[in-house]
Length: 590
Image 1 (tube, helix red, strand yellow):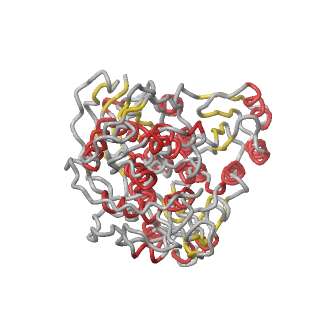
Image 2 (spheres, one colour):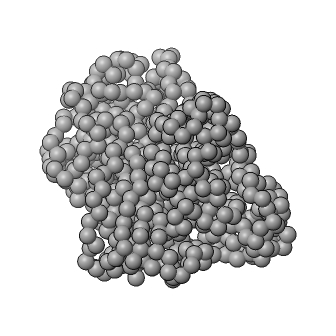
Image 3 (cartoon, one colour):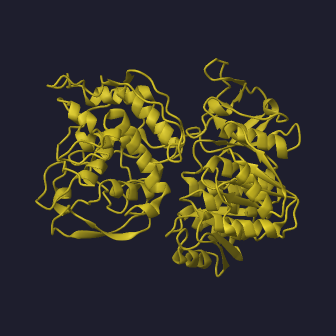
């Protein structure tokens, strides 16, 4: 999509509220904000995606930020309000694959509230949304806002010389749909031009003979920014700082990096976890919907990112390292089905990128030297180069791939490691990460296989594996399934009984799974956020090792089924307090 160059120089204004936490060290080059610019790493994924960064600014902090940046704005010539003062009616948006939280409509919501609510619903940094509003329409700092600028606020599906597509026009729909698309770029990379790990020529400018730059894209967030604005700044654009380069210059991604650096610190450094000091249980209140958990204990397992968290989980669980299981950290499906196998064997499950091995993963493998490394997925998920590097790190470990042409076939290949002739097989929707997270953890506890299914048909490879496993019962975790769906599963499993274990939402589904597969009075619990898979996707071996069911914390409290003793529980929380706040982990839903 073509972007009009934006070369406005914006002064750095002091933040109005000291409560706004800067991510990373602010640049020392206040004149440009381009110190450390890297075309291959415009933003680190920890600063773009996930529940921790999505909650990095409260609505009040966003409002204070807008007031500081728009201090000189008194309104537009056409009567439009400044962004700090603007209010908009919003629409209810149900949770989706890309925005896992629902958005509740309201009349006359502040722009700051919309930004915060969208960030949390779509698990995208509010700082990224603020920077995009600035780079697209200068809405954060302008002294002359216009109705046209609000209509095209994020530049999403809005040609420069024509109106936006009607369904995307207006401030709320621009912010929401742009945030959703940023998640889609990450979750469905093969549908777009730029992907993490890809080496590609990126043009300096649209429709010219200005040439291109060879770039290796090193984060999903960077790929998302190039899919959104598919140009990279040339040397003249970078040398100009906030000004104008030459006739071959483009400015969108330069300005994204620049504004983020000036306002919040360099975007291409890893987000450090917050200091963890569990607070005392809060006093009950109606809005939290829960009561304090007054007994038991709470510990946290987390790292700087999902890769380091996976290593921390393996260390905390004391897992075997003779065989190490590895999956992509860039999508949930392979990791969650591989987790069931790793949990059954009480061995570690680690994460890699498609084309690189993160330092934390490399260090763990180098230190433990497994004799076998099993990789979930084919080369589209984990490249042969990464497989070779893993073998070298382990001084020649045998590499075993368990992969297929899609997530369903991969789940069947992984399940094939189970000896078969079993009483029970778990299946779950291959597009729903919270249910897959809970199903994989339960399968690890039960030492059974888990398979991914889809509505409308059982994938042939999954059907074949169900026949081989020959279970007495197939338990479907989560979702609403038609009689035709369950009949197809039963037929594939040699006429096995099929039972659906599900609640009205992901949180109550997890609670029902815990009540179904664990003994009454269970006190050791594993707690994860239901809003993102990153920190919990390697938890299945921990669940199996500690015999601790997986529960999901909703905003305000933990949902626990009957037979779970939350009041005297020993809770192991996956993720820092920015991912699962203490206020959520220390309250039981009513």
